[in-house]
Image (cartoon, rainbow, N blue to C red; front, side, top):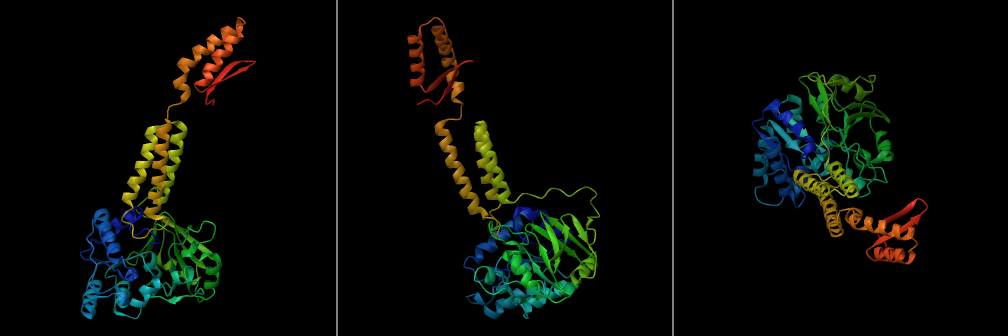
Length: 413
């Protein structure tokens, strides 16, 4: 998964996998974020997500946080954790640091267990975001490059995908656009740095990219790689890209050939069990909040109090739905709450001014007076007509005489 692994956008993918596999033992690897102070909170949010949204009970084995873990248990806990990984039917890993995870997994028992699962098909590996970076022969130390200014370079990856004949650098967040004014595609690398790194890959390797809120289901038994979600899967070699869209698939043999540069562009196939077009992907949190802001603006223009309230309530519901997301890309729930607070302030300001059109309120009083004033002007009583105009002005009504008649509007000072 390119991102969104514990977001509403990926619920249908998780449910599909669980329905296929019916796992008796499901584990979550906390290693990629094991160095963070809120590691327990992240794990709890992920467990809650899988139980509530997917109907899957997920355990977090002890002893797998790695070198940053402090506390009793030590080697014994590590043995328990390794046993849980090797005995699992479903293994999940997601947000955190690719380089930290690799330091704990590569050439170590857990890394070997993951490779064995890929080779034998003993368990489904559901790897996303930072953890997905570790699966290829080459891994991206994204934080060291993007945050700390390290020279762009590859790390040796776990090469789990190499067990399937795919010699790749796996890059999630492939279509990231958080930079706004600067290029943060390709997991925050941008085009310039990715081009430089591509030159360091051997001729038989490629970049395998997954867009955000997008999944690639690699099914060795069925010789199929199927794409789900909002974006595409990309195979990139020397700046040239072949994409497989959401709802499409290629065979694993075709994907191997694309990675090695031995195949022409295949026609991405639709899922065999679906003749109709795939359902529209679920909106991200940012999509939902932006839509609510637009509806709020429309409600203001149309003086629709119900629409204003509904826009605010829908943001609140979206924040609650996305609260379990362990990876706050695209602004996250804190950003959404800030937007909601700003709309609540504007709602209060609007309530103070009132939503009713002032013209509708004033019309029953003003129109008869305008008629009286017109009659006074017609009969030459201009002083009295001016008095009527002045009275109207004191209650905030501007009166203008034009060749085609008298017009008025609220708002005169």
